[in-house]
Length: 361
View 1 (cartoon, one colour):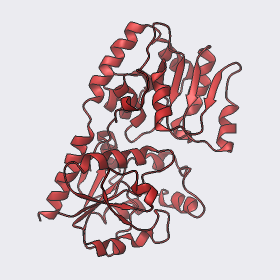
View 2 (cartoon, rainbow, N blue to C red):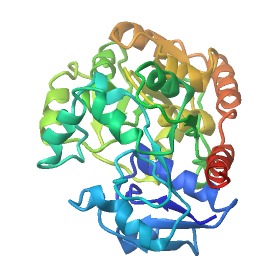
View 3 (cartoon, rainbow, N blue to C red):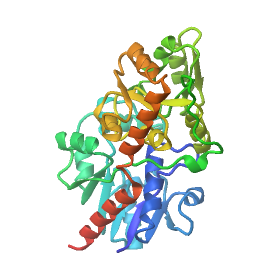
View 4 (cartoon, one colour):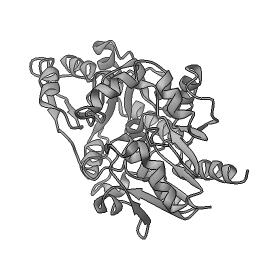
């Protein structure tokens, strides 16, 4: 079976969630079966496992994207897997597995920061109703998603008639990126770390407002941010509060922030999986997050502190509840146990099994 994997979503600057999903799944999949990766640049190819076989085509934002399948036919694949749902499928002569990560953009209709020019209005039109997504997904043979929570939401919206499988996200081990081990002092943690886009649905507003009740601590906002959005959020910073806009961090910098006497925080209102939470728990860092099903799927009921994302004061109280080192140690142990239920090797095995099933017919 010749399996092509669309690796064009792997970023070469600051990885986002889809980039991490692509690269980690790719690493696990090549251990199970020969893979040919679809890339859009030599720099991207360098991010793949050593010795990977690649084919280069156009960028994901090219006008040629609707015709991607016609270009891939020349490589005679049996199955093509895309970690997104936007690959053009017109005229394909292979089996196709597309991925829809979540339903976020149907609830929070703000285009991602990477969407530029004409893509922004087209993106808005696409998400005005369900039928365009149904047309796209039903042109695949199988649709994958990243969590049971997302699978339930997609099923309830009846977005596809195709088999819907879970190729779960999972935590990568950040430990090799650290020069020093994770620090958890007896004193209350001084650093609060948020990793995620600063779009409105991620709700950094609550995190910033809660700093009014957490004097002497620092909130670290790790992701890139536009000047306009930074100005909006900066206006909310309480007097005397310490909030740092890092505007993008490397993997090493991110791991170091988590490891430095920190609590991972997120007041997000919507997620497909919640990778930053999983990574923090895997690393042994306690977390305070929104009381929402997507986070409980990862941490269970005991692996994180859950708080109302609409209430900054209660969110701050949940952070303060971890001032006790014994409470933190219990939470860390429960969190590591919970997140251990997810693995990239298992996700790769699920995907490969489905690909083989498609070619056996």
